[in-house]
Image 1 (cartoon, rainbow, N blue to C red):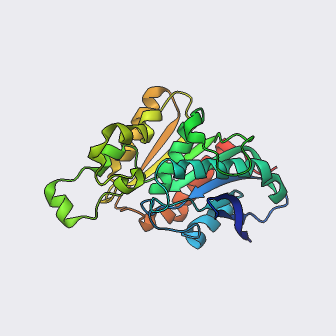
Image 2: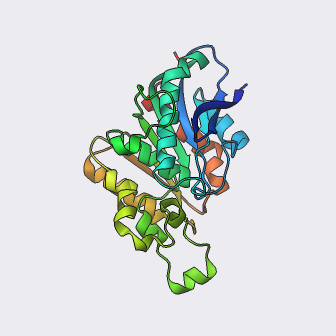
Length: 273
């Protein structure tokens, strides 16, 4: 039976608390932990999203899940969200042992906008500008050891492009508000600097990338480009294309796919002692 410890504050920014929920496997041993980041276009969503069908199920495989909130683009623009994620990783390293977590290695996992943030956290461990000063655990490392990227963005400029007709019938691109721009094309250099593809290198942690082939929000080409860049750089990447799945499709929460995700995390983070 999974134990849940909700609303644990990991940092405070400008008087606003940032919190995470811990989903703890029913075991008395130190367990590996993955930080989960919800989707929502950096504008909506909650750390409780997918609690029953996704987060509790991963915990049932012996992996603690720390599902964290982060600031939305309406509160602060990039790189604030990346700073928040790194603060959550540092908090886990500083305080995880008190909750029965094995924190020598930490994974990060995200869906959609959360996958983007997970990838940025995984790829920018040596970037001091993106480290930020959020939280009280600045002496801890924000390095992560495995990344699970579900249907996220890898090239903010490419993913934001719309034809005139697409602009009429589709939702506005989410990337503009993240960067504080009306149109991402106003500052291509900023979009590239904020894109995971820019930060891919041979020292990237192992990636598990999953995308639906019927995604109409973020095309599968975004994940394929990230996978290809990682492989070309000499990093480890596994790409899964889920047939018939759209953006946040139920196929991602099928038992077989969650079992595969858990196996990837366990193989890189270690199982409970």
